Length: 141
Image (cartoon, rainbow, N blue to C red; front, side, top):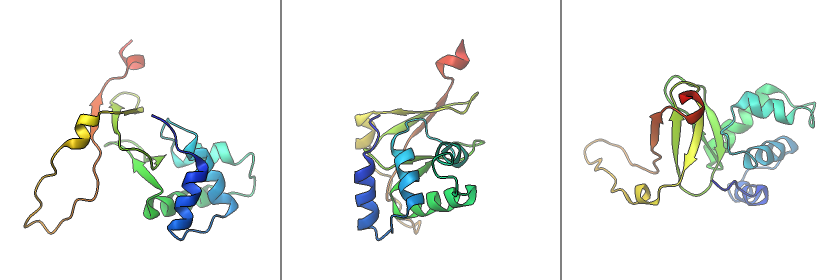
């Protein structure tokens, strides 16, 4: 999938009322440039050499705030650690049961699925993503 432009994500942050600190900018830039759905720890390892004063806790807090604001989303599957991606065009994910890798898959037909009725459930669906579980090529070999 095409990764997001960091400038677009920064603009979205401003529209959502988030201040753009140097830590947030670094995390947004790192997240926007990756397609591998990094964990918070992987992002920290990437950012820390260029921003030595950043703490692991700050990375976790910033990611939480970006998810809360709708600039990033958490992507994970049962039994795996949370991973993150920048908000972008609707897509779905392939998850490997063995190595826990996540891969984006564009499937426009899935974007047209009718949403189920939540009448009587006190719930409003706002978004959805489909996760397909299986075995990746590397693990299959």
